[in-house]
Amino acid sequence: RHDVTSPLQVDVDDIFNLACPASPIHYQHDPIRTTATSVLGAINLLDLAKSTGMRILQASTSEVYGDPDVHPQPEDYWGRVNPIGTRSCYNEGKRCAETLFFSYHRQHHVDIKIARIFNTYGPRMHPNDGRVVSNFIVQALNGDDLTLYGDGCQSRSFCYVDDLIEAMLLTMATPKDFTGPINLGNPAEITMIELAERVLALTGSKSRIVLKPLPHDDPRQRQPDIRLAENVLGWRPRVSLDDGLKRTIEYFRQLLRA
Ligand code: UDP
Image (tube, rainbow, N blue to C red; front, side, top):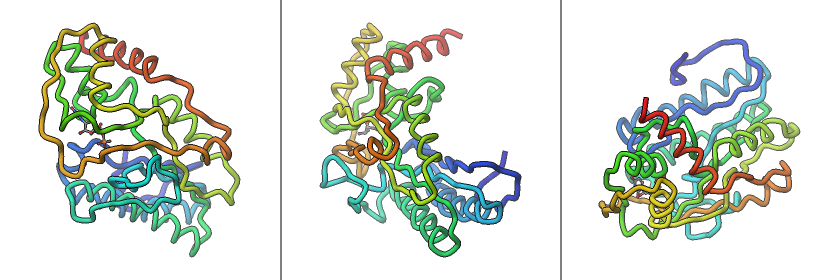
């Protein structure tokens, strides 16, 4: 256990830098600390990679594309990010981390991999995570209203956790000359109103859907272009949204019963 905003020296094999809250309500709670986690965390772990000579993978994010005007998003799209918005503590922190990864790669020849992770969900999410899949499932199982933000026409593309982990391990195992960035996610796109209806159908819940204000700078649409991952990793997500939701619902059912 260590706070990545402080330097560390430990024996390591591969380094996966996953440190940073990823749920908007959590990363906006202490925005200065969120940016510090991504920026100082990247410097400290890159220093560790440099001194040990080990490979390092950065968990980057689809948020680097901001509210995209290119759809789906390929890796060579530079994004449309508001640098002073409430999400910028996260997306600009992650963008700066990508910059640092490439600077260490060019200046110190560190073996880097940058994975741009799109919305991911699955068992073991925290019931108070605050992101949409866990919110809807927990609300549906508790018979509470489903909180749909905005008009619900905004879209996301959800990847089941096992698919994502497989892709991350494959990314780490790529040859040294492959740095990424590489999009990892499931291209199956769905609107939030459709997601709410899927969750109600799969849980058999009688909960109602209620509209809440759309958060600041909430991206309208998001879908990964995963052709690079298909070509380089020979990978495609295998778990459909319905199957992944069923497994996640089962997890939360057990958790809420306990
Ligand atoms: N959202 C929603 N209800 C919730 C939580 C989120 O309608 O209880 C919406 C949110 O406004 C966004 C989408 O669901 O359009 C995905 O939000 P999430 O926080 O899961 O991830 P994001 O992709 O925004 O980082």
